[in-house]
Amino acid sequence: MALPLPSSFFLRGNVVQVARELLGKLIVTRIDGVTTSGIITETEAYAGVTDKASHAYGGRRTARTEVMYARGGTAYVYLCYGMHSLFNIVTNVEEIPHAVLIRGILPMEGKGTMLLRSGKEKISKDFGTGPGKVSKILGIHYSHSGLLLGRDGQEAPPARIWVEDHVMKVAIDLILSGPRIGVDYAGDDALLPYRFRLPESAFSASVPVFAGGA
Image 1 (cartoon, rainbow, N blue to C red):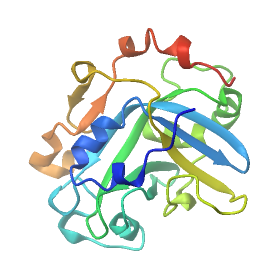
Image 2 (cartoon, rainbow, N blue to C red):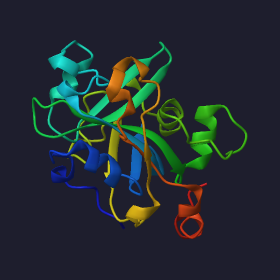
Image 3 (cartoon, rainbow, N blue to C red):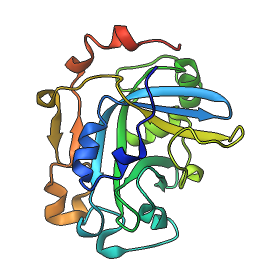
């Protein structure tokens, strides 16, 4: 069984590297006792106070974004357009508001539950593509913002989120990179190649090995 990533993984200073290395890891949620998971297929890096696309650009701090200044390995989940919860993982040490947005997953465990949450009848090609869909099928809600990732020692907590290692080995030359989506307001920073994703071909041999949990 794969182990949860250590906190040191998220405390590193290079958010771009963390975003790239999250590809192929397994994100797991246990919400009200129900477990679902998916292989991370797409991420975006946000480099804090110097990144015009970041919610923390220029040192901005609000009630919503204060969690971005927490230690790496904390969940930052915000509501988009009043309806979509978008899940980010805070990285770096306290007071440096770096974060990685999880934009896509390949569903693994708990597919039946994911279908119920989505209101769909079957898992389509783009079922786990898009940050709003990711949160919805994993059961992540903006009220989970501030949770520490990992298997903590609490007694039956209502929600738990963690990332496991060694699910899928990803070759660097397979990773696609490019500008982030929906950040045109960020000027030149909108062109930064901070979005990382895996092509469909990356799963041709891996899906049969890791599939399960219908």
